Image 1 (spheres, rainbow, N blue to C red):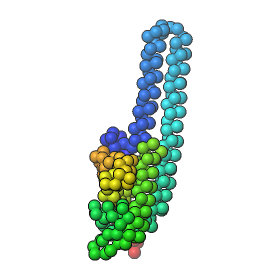
Image 2 (cartoon, helix red, strand yellow; image 1 turned 135 degrees about the horizontal axis):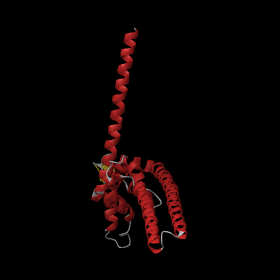
Image 3 (tube, rainbow, N blue to C red; image 1 turned 180 degrees about the vertical axis):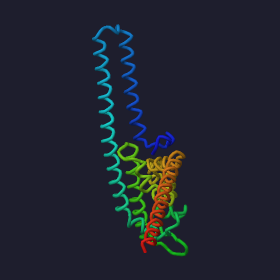
Image 4 (cartoon, one colour; image 1 turned 90 degrees about the vertical axis):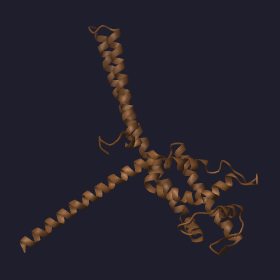
Length: 252
């Protein structure tokens, strides 16, 4: 990130820190102006009060900055752990899902209905038994349930959405897209006792946020900067290799 980076692409933590520090500085300046208007400039007491206000403002800024940095670091660390737990705990279930419906396919409406109701169905001529369907439903519930837990953590600001996007945004949106018909059927289930309109609503909100234009633009911007750094490093290596080859030739 550089000073010429568009403001909306600056990391959220940097923007919040700058806003906090700027606000503290402005409040300190306002305090000094008010003191200078109320008291005559020849009086030493207001001057001491002003100095105290400056010190208090700077202390507040430093304290706020330190607290936020510590909170932000803890938030990122907890997100990393939660993401690793989701990946590890759902790996076998995701592999089993891909084996049954295909690695590059999502659930159809009929397949989602059959799985949700624990009924047998057919995929590309292959018959899936009732037992397999129930097992698949259990797997899907586990995958979505763990994602819902991540989404709730993001809503409560325990986890950092930017970290999730950076680590596995593509994986999350892809698995959500593949299983979306299951969620839709659960929301609109004809059997009132099985209908659940609030199922995975935090996950829905997280995906919508991940797919928002600002998030997409920020990700594309960061990716372009990474590509630029890789290309630049590659050119430097090529130049260094070329120089070494010339030196070797001259020595030979």
